[in-house]
Length: 242
Image (cartoon, rainbow, N blue to C red; front, side):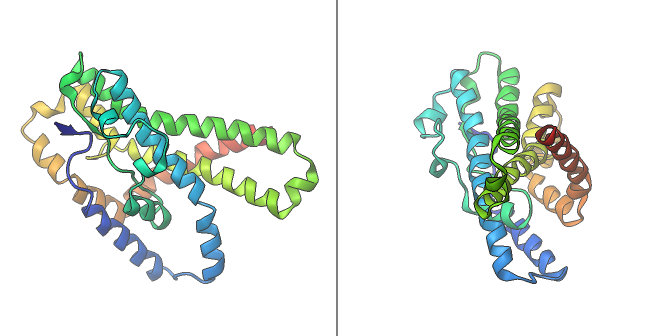
């Protein structure tokens, strides 16, 4: 049986520690209470984004004939089946995160490479769906809700939570599309170009975590992701206000 993303996630703990350390080196937290409230408002987006992402992998693999996700209780929207505590903390502190990897058995697929690619793309597709749906909901709220509600504390909290859901799912979508093992993007290009046939594939995959750590520490991921996330969010906000 193969894991959708084989290899343990423990090395990702190092990423979280490094990102937290870098945050404090850059000035730390000036207002702990404000910081805590801001992070609390991220929770719905984090839970929804990670859960829906992993559910996408599970449901598509199941539809393609693999009984493994269902047998392991992963074909569900229940966050308890999908949330990884360290992945959640990473999204809090580092701006990226992950859920509990969905296990699959590709031997059940009729067209192995195609179906593995479909499973890989399913997670980010679900994040995109959440972005679109939340953007539409936010547009209706902005245009139809009474001004008094929008200007109230409750209205402000609702708007911020919905904005966070949009941003977090955009981040998850683009981060997971990076062509670096063990992310979805790497699995997609692996299946498209049949990269596993090359001798360098194994060593590259085994060292994928360390490569990812270096890309994050040297802010290469930020250099790539920030303009993409910002650009898509601006498109969403233009639609919301339009």
